[in-house]
Length: 194
Image (cartoon, rainbow, N blue to C red; front, side, top):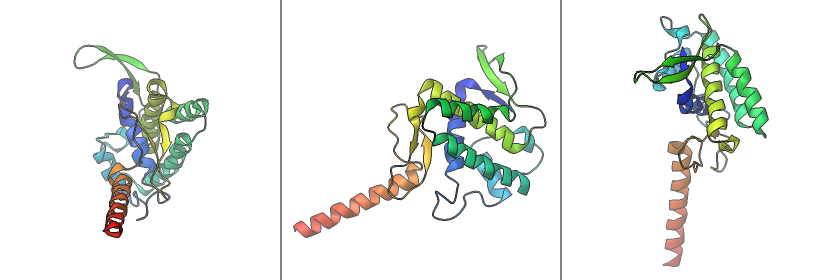
């Protein structure tokens, strides 16, 4: 796998989405219960990891990704920038090789981080996530690692939005739940006022 450094939001998005597949966050159980669900997760994110080019993820791959999910959550919950950087460095070292300068499709020089040939799926994913989280801290700051604001949610995320105002780990789920609750509360107030 070859990870472009300018594409740190991809790694940060994968980090957020991976952490929020946890049964700790989801009320409907584990979001990655089977190797097939891991295949779907990788496809949804457009990830073509070298470890699964010709093979489907195994139960062992899934187990290792579940362990990675805990590590990533720990990084997103760090109290300091230095802790976040140290954690992300640990992830990148699992499969990443030295950065390389290569021309992109528009013939511009870009930094890339390749992964080691034969690296396991979880290690390649760790390198991608590590590079993404390092990019978030470098470009946007550690303050972009946040906890979900939805009541009762234990989700965390890396906010890579331009404005930096994201409030929910899964806007389509938590944000919608909050909006529905607020709407119902307004409706209740209106019915009492009448």
